[in-house]
Amino acid sequence: MIKDYILVDVETTGLNPATDQIIEIGAIKVLDGKAVETYEQLIHPGVSIGEHIVELVGITNEMVKDAPTMSEVIGEFLEFAEDLPMMGHNLMFDYGFLKTAAVKHGNNFGKTGVDTLSIARKYLSQLESRRLDALCSYFGIPDEHHHRALNDAAAAGELYRVLCEKFYIEGKNDKDFAPVPLQFSVKKVSPATAKQISYLKSLLERHGIEEPVQMEQLTKSQASKMIDQILFQYGR
Image 1 (cartoon, rainbow, N blue to C red):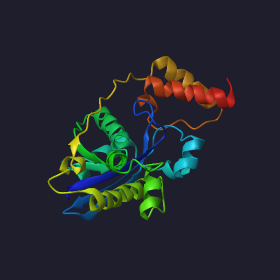
Image 2 (cartoon, one colour):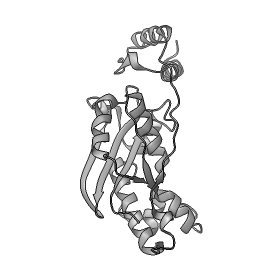
Image 3 (cartoon, helix red, strand yellow):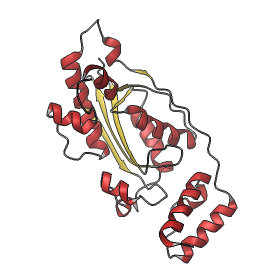
């Protein structure tokens, strides 16, 4: 059982850290078991947020249009996180995106962490679902804004407290509730080619679509994904 850590959750444009982007970070600094500071930031992903993501998390393109980009945000988040262990529900998802963003912008991000999902899988195997919202409902944990980052970070923290209260036995199962090294390899990405950027710009202009922020920083896969989306929605 630990008392000093950073609760964290991210919302993203998709499931793949190599091709998708963070659109919101929510984090809570906990020292000696008490929340002492919060961090909450919407982020402009540089690409359009898909309708299915808007429906799922409630973050629209309008909400992020004036938000800072990840290059402006990642440094201040790393400063907030310090060298404290991280904690979250399905933590490797969040860590994968954060480490990818950190490495992309020239920062190292080696961390230890506690995943409340792993604890729930071991001690609540009888439950049909161990998703965060299902566990919040099961234990009566407040979850008013599910799929918003700060809400989900706070919910994971309360879940950890409940799981410790019910299952932690000092000296017997400490390792189940203690931080472990987080292992995630950031895949090398290639920048979009000049041909891709040129074709993408022509499509955007032809269909009257606003050019995304940081157009020249798109990766090959991101540019390809955007081109496919435009062709699917508007045609050539």
